Image (cartoon, rainbow, N blue to C red; front, side, top):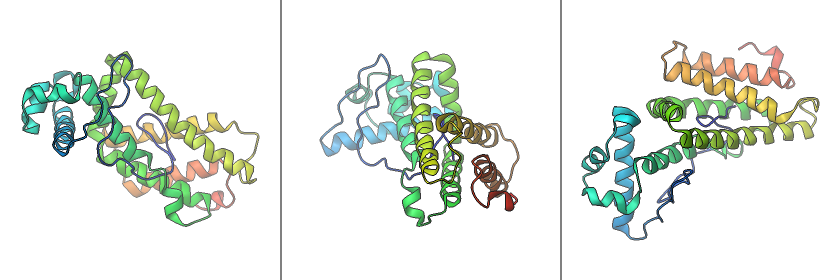
Length: 234
């Protein structure tokens, strides 16, 4: 499993429809539009912003490029967002929702925690690969904007807490030793997965997807010493 701002834990994409602009430290969110036209315009701006950010990066992206790509008047941007930072936060929030996938455990229909871990890692890695260019932009922004660094850390903590909750559940069931600190363990394992995903999908480390997935699953399960894990080679 996984966690970090660009990380995750068990689940499924939940973003749908118009969402309120995520809270960015120091910036006031605009209310979500209520009219169909407003919803369409906002969605077009967010989709266009993603395209521009992925092509140009955050620093070089311009609001005029976003409105032109969306096919809307420049003034429409400020009806929905205060700034370039605000719309970037919305793009990041949508990707975070996709990568969170909170229902993977229920969808899998298995009681074996090794299956939960494998399913969560698979969905996370597939989402990361799909969003790799945006993950690279997020890394860039976090290095130059302390407000986004704080937002990234907040999101990372939420993912880690989610994985820690799973580990505590396994401890309560007697499947994982109570000697492990659940959150520290979640931090270590989640950070491993997210960092490896960055190296492979952003920086181009050549690892075949199935090999990557099987190896990370094996490390996760053996770190927790789940029954039967050591018998299965990655």
